[in-house]
Length: 122
Image (cartoon, rainbow, N blue to C red):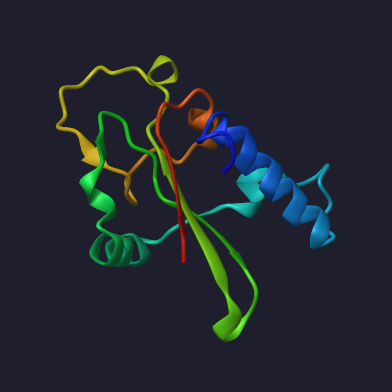
């Protein structure tokens, strides 16, 4: 991401928009929520084990999303997680901070205004 991750969410959105155009996917119908898929519990466990993804914890974590392109051995993946923007999530419980995982918030709107966006390339 250019600009030292400034406006990282917008850069990610533009990247996905460009990929949808490249893949001839109709943009007016699909948005980020249609291109990014929530990772399964097994995938989240693998990411934690291989990439130590669970070292960053948040009061309200997102789930882990993935973007895939290619086939077979040529599959490329992005794993995306973020701290849910606190002004959009009511912090009513005193739960311990947790890493982004399968049980995290499954709503990409919380990415807007986030102070922590993580994109891993696999």
